[in-house]
Image 1 (tube, rainbow, N blue to C red):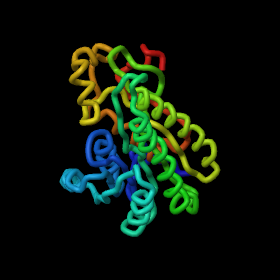
Image 2: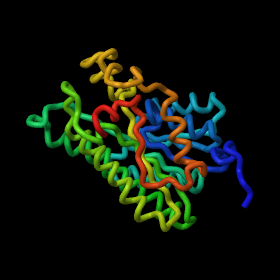
Image 3: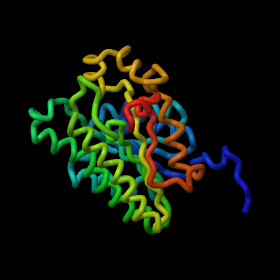
Image 4: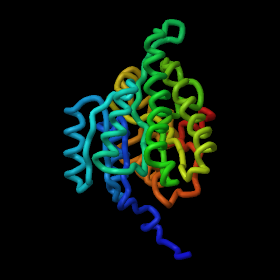
Length: 264
């Protein structure tokens, strides 16, 4: 066996990645990471304007990027996303399930329709998109890497002031979905892993940031900082590449150490 260098192990040239929720925030950061490592990337989200702006940003960085608008809350949109992706770029080697929703409300007053929306997008869409991509592209070729965006919210409860029962529940489900799918699809050469981000400033977390304050959120982390637009890159490429070819069914918190204190 020829031993590859660390640079060769992390190299994603010739591979294609599909990233949902890829037009901003964590998804766009992961798209940058995969593209910078050499992968061709397809990003998806609901809004065409966001996708056009994000794709231009990726292309300006020298990344082979394109976009497909789709709403992962809807089965037909996910079917179309997969068929269009395969038609336009061929097989998918890396799937990043990142589209997500959150809802803040006390558990006793949490609307049922909001619970369904969060669970639908954060759990059901991860399963269905993984199923579609695996059957069409990964299982037949006996290879693939699926990366699920979970959260440290999936490891337990919240600090005082954060009331997101559906979100926490959904992300706990994503963690065990990751483990169960990895156990089942290992025989197909498919690896399935999860990232559990801590607090990253984003459009989705703006309400929490405003309510709790940046300094208070920083104080919860041993590193006394929030996540930034580089912090998910290394783990994303590790999971996607041959550098992580013996890693499956795992989750790792990228949270400045918050989960060490909260017991995740």
